[in-house]
Length: 222
Image (cartoon, rainbow, N blue to C red):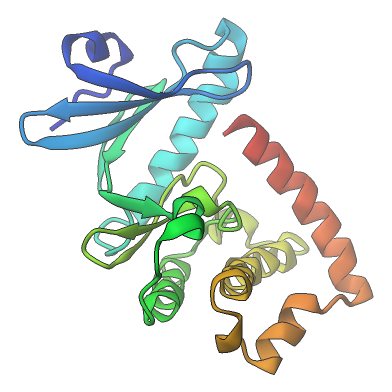
């Protein structure tokens, strides 16, 4: 088990995957014997940001991982402190890396769709699948979805009119897959999927506007 306290990171063999910015945490790769983990760490951010926004995001992501415990395709949750969260490191390549030189298995998008359905059944929408680095093709051939800081739960959006926005986020998770298919395997996209990807009703535009502002806020601070 990995120790999630930021003060413990210097005692382990660590690699910085991404340095901190004013609104983004530091990301560490931590080795422990024969295993590796990823640590998202807000301890280097400003005091106000890390203690208000950072702790809030760690709490949200921790909640998502607990709700999704046991779902294959979601990294294992190892632990969290107030300012850091530790999750399984997934060996493989993300969709951004795959765009340039790798072939995607023919059943990848079907498996990814099934994975999205499984976490929707747990009442969680990811909300940020259009970011290619959040989807990984594991070395085992399995799709994995990472970075749950922007996710939302059905429970917190269960009342009108938030329930409409939640359903829109669920739909967006699937539309993100269509977008990836259009980029990587356009011949597999059906006319119905293309229509869904391009559809824009007036009510939907209003919901999308609210959704996009919420997503932009969550992405900016995640």
